[in-house]
Image (cartoon, rainbow over all chains, first blue to last red; front, side, top):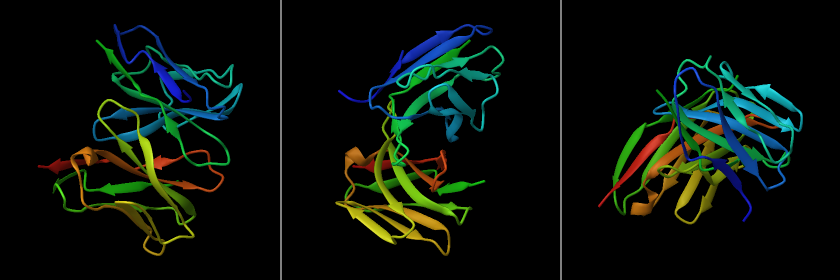
Length: 112
Length: 112
């Protein structure tokens, strides 16, 4: 099956710990994105990457970091500097010739 | 930058009736307007989109209209069914831009 996978579906961490969320795609898409979703807030862009070894900050990048060492992988690290990390995180990918973004199933992160 | 406003935030419709969700955008240069449907615990999926050179587009029970002069676009769902219950997001993007700007979402409830 072609698509985007995110793992795990649910993740629990203690405050002060860094945590890395996985995102893998086998669609051969160049661009990948990370969004954060909070109730009533819609989708807010954290980071995006148009090509391997390159990425740009989105609207709410503070407290997050990413890497893009492989075309198919775009992991997101939620650092201890992120003040309100509990949220639903969505990864997406797209091709330059198409505006459509394909989303993964999401990871619900709870930090206590 | 682009800003997308979406109304209403919640909509309850009797099964079989029509539902309308409205969005406005701020940047007159935006030229692509997708609509995504998100079911509980899943990532959003594209259901229909429209480009700025078209005023209306239909796909079975779903239609989208675009008024470039007023900078607003709407999603119309006719003959609503229980499986239409979900959160719907409108979005806008500029040609050549890497980012899609999402509205805050509308939670649609189809009442039996």
